[in-house]
Image 1 (cartoon, rainbow over the protein chains, first blue to last red):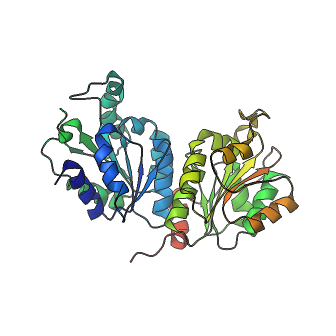
Image 2: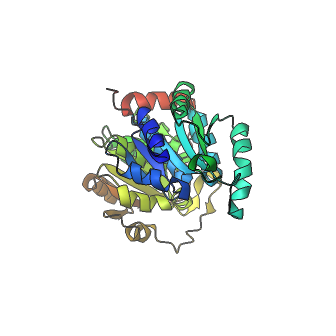
Image 3: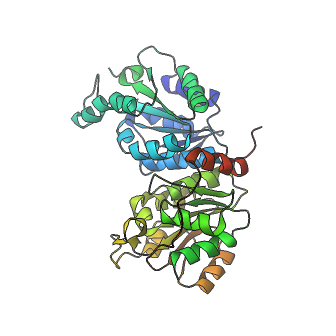
Amino acid sequence: MSDASEILDALKGCGIDLVASVPCVNLRELLLLIRGEPGIRNVSVTREEEGVGICAGAYMGGMRPALLMQNSGLGNSINALASLDLLYGIPLLMVMSHRGLEGEQMVGQVPMGRLTEPLLRAMNISSYVIGRGDRPSIIRQAWEEAIEERRPVAVLIKQSYWGRA
Amino acid sequence: MKRAEAIAIIARGSGDALIVCNIGYPCRELAASFDRDENFYMLGSMGLASSIGLGLAMARPERKVMALDGDGSVLMNLGTLSTMACHGPGNYLLIVLDNGVYGSTGSQPTPICARTDLTRMARAAGIDVVEEARDPGGLRERLASMGHGVLVVKVEPGNADVPVIDLSPPDILRRFMDVAARPRR
């Protein structure tokens, strides 16, 4: 089984039925798999914050949404996470490709790479890390926390998971 | 036509449609004129009413969903028009109440500047049904004929003298989801 299909299986195991997404090169294979998955509706969004809104609406209608993005998208989503999801108590599973740390080739990724975990801590949003050799089954735990605590949670997929660091 | 009047016309004719309402005075005007469980009052996250409405319409394709947005708010999340064109379900109507100002913060002009045409922008984004209304009669006609798409409603600047909403955000969500969320199998 490939690295990407293990993540897809974990999402399916949570019953995720809508994935709003902004691509990252590390998520290329996963996004292809999601697009081919009949049980999941993939909504390509123009900006991650828009995805937070779509996921919130889908949740209100009874779906189980996830937001798939690069960690740079966290910066684009801060206000929505705080003044929509945290304010109302709306769960959200955020699955992020964590760029900008180990193994990073692109200097532009570094600032948000370093800021991602501090920003999540400042917002009191739990994060779960998937790195080299880790099993994505931890996504299930993240989803359960989101539902039980009625909050967003973050799953950070390190470059090392994809063998790129 | 004042915005509060347009909101009252929309809400009173909405039947059992789910309504997502934009931040600020529009929420207060909706709550004052026609409070109901099917209203979701968005108290933060400016710009996202159209996105919440779109997600909701995807989750409940058998229900009519409307979002009440503004010109300043839709400009803050303009990509929403492309996403809507791409995925826009047949049960989703985005209503843009266009008064050319940020009404809840003191009526400062939006960058519309009497130059930007939101109706043409929505058409150019690829939305198949885009209409305009400029008076109460026209608004009622459009609401009766439009099942989905974008409706730009030209309204005058100014807010009604209405109180703040006396519900906590978790209570707004709970109340709304009791009527909006499809039952779990």
